[in-house]
Length: 516
Image (cartoon, rainbow, N blue to C red; front, side, top):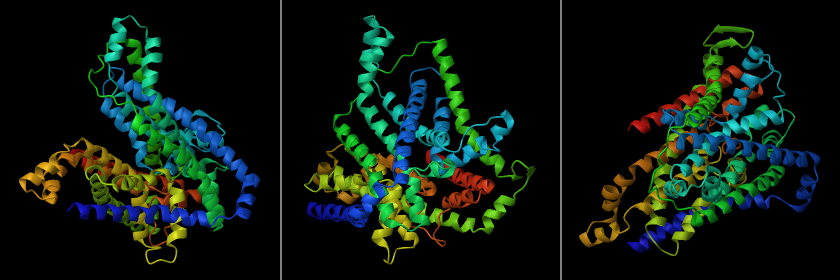
């Protein structure tokens, strides 16, 4: 039996070599020195690189500060309705990044709602818009990363410091900062990578300010310049690879904190007042674009004609919106089912079956974490072009599985490592087959993680535009790509409708999953 499992490990490892490493190598091989020299000496490339680094850096710092503060308010104060605030702060993760840019245009653009209402005149298109949109896109991720760290911090050292009369500033310096040091490094690189590889926000609101992902998107989609796209894609891999390596190194040396003493929070009017004001402000900022989408979806033409209409919904249907929504459902459900099953099997083989190939399988599986969706999509174009699955829904399902596989895999990998490691030995002694042990003992224990994995895969497959933008065609287009289509011709009302549909579907799926 064990030899068969070893063979399955080898087969799965080879699959990831084929599905991840193979396309990347194909992309690398399209690059030659003359093209490389010409692109690196190009002024537009240098400007795009500068824009990407500077605006992504500023956005990442602000997002981390804002997200970290929100997490502190929820874990270190006695505010009520914490579940509500957590829900609101994570809602922006249910819509594509391009929707955040569109929301800012609707709110703060030349004829934006807040622009007309408050008489604002912000230079939105350009660096400011990219920064604001990137913060809205990445803030929920930064918040969740900080929240997950802070809620597991042990209060015992702080209680002892209070007894010894150590002041709050010294406690922050000697206790909080050392605890956050290593996780903070991972958060910084993760948020920076998330922003620097995104093209949705800068494409929508960047104006004449180009970033590397936008340049790559325009060169491949508009000019079919795959060589230039490959060079930019390789360049975009660098921060992702650095973030991946740092995160990998920190995993083994991360602060292992088991909550022995929960924080006993005393009443503090100033702290609670600040927390309510801050969380209330963040909540308004998060909800404003969503309310705007709902408003804009049912007005004839903002700001000229604000009368109620369902025209934009009918317009979406006329433009095959229901067909594309069907494509998204097929892709998302397929990715959720196949991806969850595949992640469970892979995690079981690497976490519970200790062989020489276990680490190889684990390493191959998490490699996709270091590949931005835009880069993965381009590499798949070059690798699979001319094959039977190219241009089919199967192609989009495959690229989404590979793109999002690592996170649910790690969820299950960590969960299975916490399950009693003697179960297999006990089952062998009692004559229980491994299959029956897995289905009747292990799966019931890890069911919540399985549900979390399936929801993660479904939601991300419904809203992604990066990995599929180069691979879809008229017949296979998912509905999220209609946002790009409508935004290009300034049909913002239809863009709002699409964003609302994606948000609504994802909220329904998450709600059903949580209730069950």
